[in-house]
Image (cartoon, rainbow, N blue to C red; front, side, top):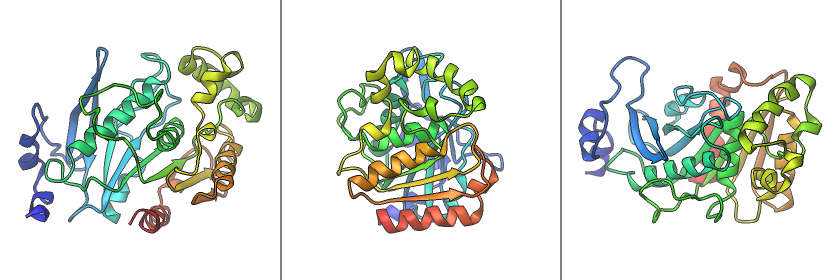
Length: 293
């Protein structure tokens, strides 16, 4: 019975949820588009859901990049993971011109709680395992969400499912920041030209002027022995996000004896097709299969 429900079309499934939007019908669109998972202040927060053929093995919650101040959930780098059996939910978060940190983390955790509360028959994927993944600024936010399960300052009170936990079982971080207290010292001139204004918007100032907030926003300062497995991918020619950010997070994981894999994308810059080849997707799928199932 459950398998039959999981394979229902979005048009059949969505009436189970109040206020659900129409499913995407054009080729290449999500199975479910524009599903509202919360309202933060005056900002409605939406998600799109992509499902594989057959019963999903789990859910990847995707966080888009854009220097925390731009970007769209329509950009889903890991959409191809549906070909490896994973459902993918790409979620909104308030951008930094609208709300400063930690609003972004509060919104993503609200999405996870909503997605877990409406799993199984309602949206067509299991309630576990959940994986958080993102690229660039989205990679930073994904890592931060993943290593702060239950953090009192970062859970927030966004959404209607505060009784549901926002824990994840693995993290996939594509060329994201991990330590906002060191990132500027590691950056190229081009990186500084992007990062300084982005951090000003995100934090309300530069990291050295607000060290406590910068540490709160840095995944490396939250890693402990309870954190989920982590996969890092970063290009060695990235002139925008220092590869040392990935090295720092890997080091924090290794010091705690946690499961971590760091794959350097040789010749890779800040994103691009080298991160989403079928070989890369197979690598991600193998890591998730080994760590979450």
